[in-house]
Amino acid sequence: MGMTMSEKILAAHANLPSVKPGDTITCKVDWTVCHDMFFNVDGQDMYKDVTHLDHPERCLVLLDHSVPAATSRDALGGVYARDFVKKHGIKTFIDVGDHAVIHQALAERGYAAPGRLIAGGDSHTCAAGALNAAARGFGPADITYLFCTGETWYQVAPTILYRLHGKLPKGCTGKDVFLYIAGTYGDATGHSVEFGGDGVANLTVPQRQSIATMCAEINAEFAIFPCDQVLEAYLKERGDEVITPVAPDPDAEYAQIRDIDLSAMVPYVAKPHFIPMNCVPVTEVKGLPVNQVVVGSCSNGRIEDLRIVASMMKGRHVATGVRFIITPASQRIYLQAVREGLVETLVEAGCVVTNATCGCCYGGHMGLLGPGERCLSTTTRNFKGRLGSPESEVLLCAPATAAASAISGAISDPRDIIEGRT
Image 1 (cartoon, rainbow, N blue to C red):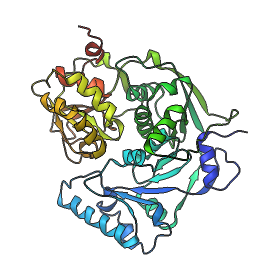
Image 2: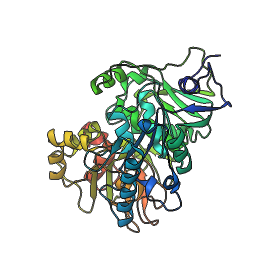
Image 3: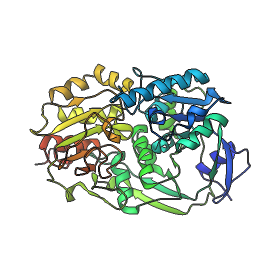
Image 4: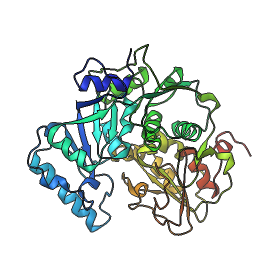
């Protein structure tokens, strides 16, 4: 019996010839990663008792959630993080200044790569699957153990294969693909998700990142894309000299195979306060007033997202009574947006452009909501109270839908602007 991509990566890191769904295995991981929340949450401070790391060269710590520190408690977490990496000789530390949201840092700085196994102290670690890696999130106890030993256990999950066909129409991006999947098929708990088909070649790497990131919201174990010419070009531009792609065997077995026609895609929106089986075409919620619009986070804060928004905002202005917040996924993306003139366009249009941070996405800072307010956002979650008051509402969408809605002051179909429809 052949293996899927996730099964191959797990088998290689467990030093086994093969694995199958249901097997429980111990694997050595390539990278253990955590962010500042690991150091500032009460009752989750087992790391303070750590006396020795077997593999500090495979540990990465970065500050991204509360950057710059929004409270004194966040500042203390930063102190603890800096002390931890110094004490244990961790050289891979990303501090404030050249910082990035954890999942963008893994992609743009070479840590996520084909065939790698990554354990992260963040639920959206599956984002690295866009780069043909197997990655998933772990809690503080597991991350502490991983820091100390470099290994952990996995139960091999069955895999759902999404075969993508065709090419996305104007006005649709990777986020719309995920919202369609979540709205049509719902939860994937206990399963890994993999992507294939001729349509994959028509998705950019950032679009793949958006889809893989969001697979945490359907509880996928791993979410993996194949390594094709598009990804290889991205990796070579990044500076990778050795690329070790992982492909599924022709006779790999899947729990389900689902085909998706990308050319039939339309802009989608996730309604409050959950995602699975709660996503609809934008036309079903069109006209709903919004108080705030957000573009950013690990899902949609990359340069091509900012280009989409800037192109739609150029010569236009944010609607009266609407706050439009733009948060790049990394300071390097921010700098590129400055050099391309995107920031100037966005600020002239009435947008607020923040530094790279998880910010309001996790309900920390940079744009929380008050009672009775409604936000349309490209961030990852829309739980009740996720972005502030529990009496507020959060709906999720793609960048083009966000920009169109910021202009009109109500949820809008981006195709009306992009295609010049009235």
